[in-house]
Length: 151
Picture (cartoon, rainbow, N blue to C red):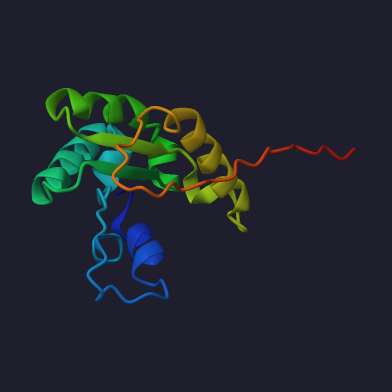
């Protein structure tokens, strides 16, 4: 879900190169809170919570959601993490990950992707152990992330 004006979601979703006709849920559906001028003035937190619950109810088979901050929701200061922690109190089987990186942190977006990857590692990795349903094991490689400073 994109927490911002509907145009932000349209620009990031419907203009992608993949057509959403292949039954892939992630390519078929997206939601936006559609922030209006009144939300800019009075805040959009209640709107975000209402939209998250509505999306989960519309698709009961989905238990996880990523909520993206846009420039508009960043400017008004909606505390999306508080809302993301509040929704599972009403819907305990649901999990929400908040991406606090408006405009993905710049024109190349690489800074925002890096920030979101680190947040995912810090918040989600290791919190749930998956049930092993196969004799095959998937190995994965963890890369050490180094920061280089140039003066």
